[in-house]
Amino acid sequence: MPQVCPISECIDLHIHSTASDGSFSVSQIIEAAKNLGLRAISITDHDTLEGSLEALSHPQSPSLEILSGIELSADFPSGTMHILGYMLRVDDSAFLKMLERIQLARSERNLRIVKKLQALGIDVEYDEVIEASGGGQVGRPHFAQVLISRGVVQSAEEAFSKYLRKGRPGYANRYRLKPAEAIEAISQAGGVPVLAHPFTLEPASEGALEEIVVELKANGLKGIEVYCPDPNLERRARYEKLVRRYGLLMTGGTDFHGAAKPDVHLGVGKGDLRIPYSLVENLKACRS
Ligand SMILES: [Zn+2]
Ligand SMILES: [Zn+2]
Image 1 (cartoon, rainbow, N blue to C red):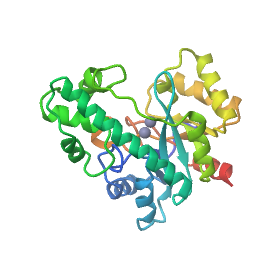
Image 2: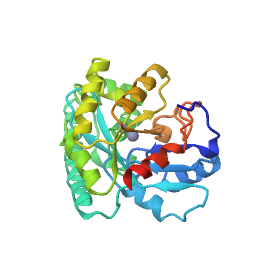
Image 3: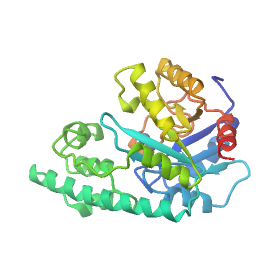
Image 4: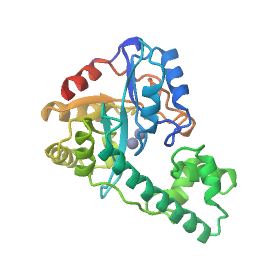
């Protein structure tokens, strides 16, 4: 795996905009990517194609390639499973209908979080949370913002660890696709499904992760996000080994969220991440 590539040959295929829980608008992301000199990006908002749609309708620059993208949440017993989808048709009506169903479930879940926080004696109104989202999709990071602004907690981390994380009193579960459904939906829309940041699955062992990957591959998974802003290079090497063993693709991205994750920067993660453009060529070859 090449360790260093010039930034003009680098990519970032995991970026959140204000269409989900990022703090940069799509235009700001595109400007920042151009200023940095990245060669390709993908905006992969949670359960919505709005960010990608906007990026693709933006005046295209010959130096910056934009791939359509999305990040779907999948139901998984431990940890968090996210499936990225790349180069999918952004006007696929079945896919858009499925996203609508997910958005409805999200709104319903958010109302339950408001009720739970209120029951804990915290004075929170849903309107405030909507305002914190800046008009984009409302998610738990926006609840965290409101809890900070109300002085209930000092940081987003505290908001999650005290109230919003799974198992905490302000947590409400929501409908999620099964992993196989997420993979199939992306494939049906012409996209390439990829397992995002495998460490958030919190696998009990290397073998447990391998079993998950084998099952996902049987369901149509095409790749693993090997490059992410994780200082644990041993872990990255393990993912790379899995990719090679099972004939999968490697992808990479910073999971940039702007102010919500201030130590992670566009394109370079915590500073030293360099993701080569060759991964985009492999993605394209897989799709065609
Ligand atoms: Zn994710
Ligand atoms: Zn993400």
